[in-house]
Length: 200
Image: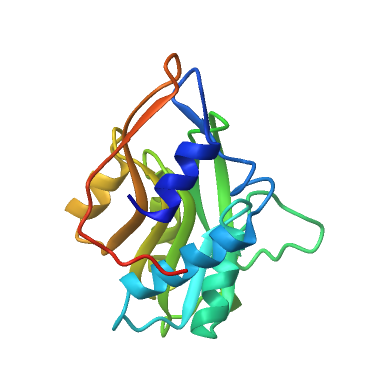
């Protein structure tokens, strides 16, 4: 069992509707130690992969993406979900359904921040049905760039996102893959993964 699986077992709460609540260390309050370990582990899993940009979607993926950007010493871009007064009309746009919030979002990246020369590592905190990741892939392809890999903190293995992305040929690495969880018993079973040496 790796460090993230142990942290989930000790700190997570399962809510009705297949919702895993880990906002005390990942996506509301951030445990910097765990985030640092995830960034090092993710970079290690993509050893030998050329990356010159990290891409995520607001908001929960930003912390992990920023730490990875620091390790790679490359820019971090995050797709926005809402227009602001200074949003440019010159942007790449895709649609993503949020499993957590049960709604469709238009997400966008301003064109100057993604280039055809970019080899992009896509990063997010959760992978469920894969809608957000597919939206980011779409945006990278609109820019003419290449998806170098996809790094996920927690994958819900009982949902289709991870399987589809792997079938599509993407190099997907998820630090923790949940095979089953039960809110009534508060139990979680993780998928066995190839042995990875944890980084502390």
